[in-house]
Each structure stands twice: as C-alpha cells, then as structure tokens.
Image 1: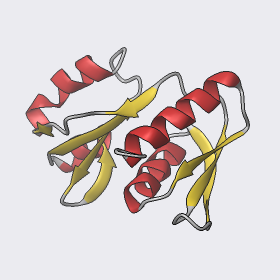
Image 2: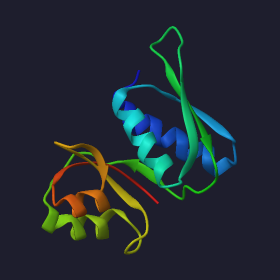
Image 3: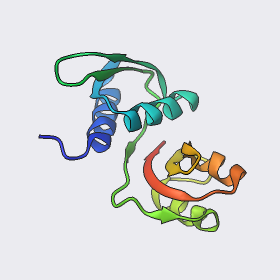
Image 4: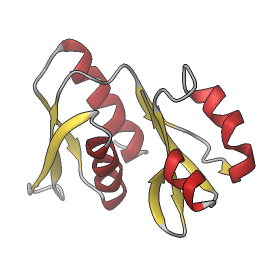
Length: 128
C-alpha cells in the first residue's frame, strides 16, 4: 500500500541507480512527472516515458548513473526566497551542488529558478 507516491518514486530511482540498472519503473502521477522533467533538464536522468497498465500507469525512467542521492522532503516546508540558503545547506551537501525542487504558483521549479524569479513555495524534494 502506497502512502507517498513521490517518496516511493524517488527511492526506487535512487536504489536502481545505485545498483547500476539502466532503467526503473515508478508509479505515475502528474507531480512525479513534473519532478522527472526537472531531473531530466538538470541531467540526473536520461529520459522517461509514461506506460499504461491496469493500475493507473507508470513511468519508465532511463538512468545514467549521476544520482548520488534523492528523496522527498516531508513535511513540505514553506520557504521564502531569503530562507533558501538555509534549506540548501540542510538538504544539499555543498553550495551549488544539487537541486531543491519546490512547488510554487508558477508550477514545479528548482531552487535556481525560484531565486531568479524571486518566488517562494513549498519544498518537495532534493537531488544531487
């Protein structure tokens, strides 16, 4: 029984990447799709495609071995632009290494896009 699709998807991706598998199948949702799009833009995964099955679908994610760690952030903290550095220091291993993923009124974006657009939001996940 799944309680948090995002957390399950990110843990599945991380574990498959660490053992050297070329791809991983994760449960599909709109939020997971947006996060996979950000991971692909930053080069953490090669690509992904949605496949339909009887349980609502899943994403087949092509891995490239670049993920050291990724995970969901629970609870989903509200963060302002001026507090972004504090959360980066908490979840990422070094400055300018990795990304924080936020949900904002402009959609799902990473921490660099949030700083450039001067917008805050709620933390969803991290990856490095």
